[in-house]
Image 1 (cartoon, rainbow, N blue to C red):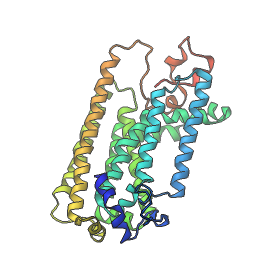
Image 2: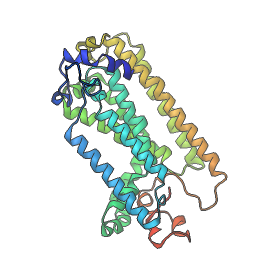
Image 3: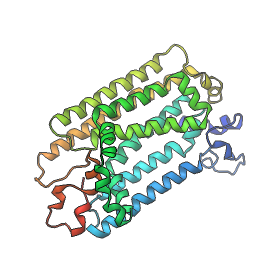
Image 4: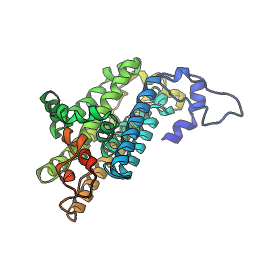
Length: 339
């Protein structure tokens, strides 16, 4: 799909304007210009700044944590690599030509959304950014985090949003609401609403994945996590099927933009529905299989073994009692967690 988009990009955008940040990009027509650089990249300053701040804070936190507790302690090298992969997925979704294509092709828009919700979001959850960001703070601020996160004004909303039912409802509501024709049209016509759409997809996906793969799922929690994954696969697949088998195009805005790519709006919509339906469903199956692998591995863990994540905000930022009892850890590791 990405190859098809790229192969027709120069011709399509030489006859049509571009939106959502691509208006500042100059499409080179020189015969010697690179095919890669001639694509309409999107560099919204505020998006780039947010991503840079996010990455720098994570790097600073991990560096400080490893300096105190040793390399690979607190946050493992694998988790740091997962964060880097998540940032790469986020860049592909928001800074690459895919963002510009999304204003012209519904199918490209769906690929962009899947990257945000099914690739970047779970990678960030598994990389434990809260712990890293907390260690990026000055010592005094970091020391006050436990009391802050236990404050009822913070703890109660956090628990409600990250509880399986709450996260499931928020994510499902965002997904279905933004695919209503009236809201999709609003997002395509206005950059602010477009940013709100992507933010709601990404944030609710973070909450959803936190509630399923971000915690120590045992017993009934394990069953709830599987149920959440299964039902999300079902309802997202249903939305994808509705888009795929629709007899008419839902989004008139794409009727005037898809012709430059050699397809009509209905074919484009059906392709987008398939993207949501098939690859999206596979992502939830892979997550479920990964959970099974984790659970089987835990059968052989020692009593002091730790988990990938923790759904408690206070523990996610400062550490667990099991780690504080670990004799080999330095004194400063009382604020760490190997989840």
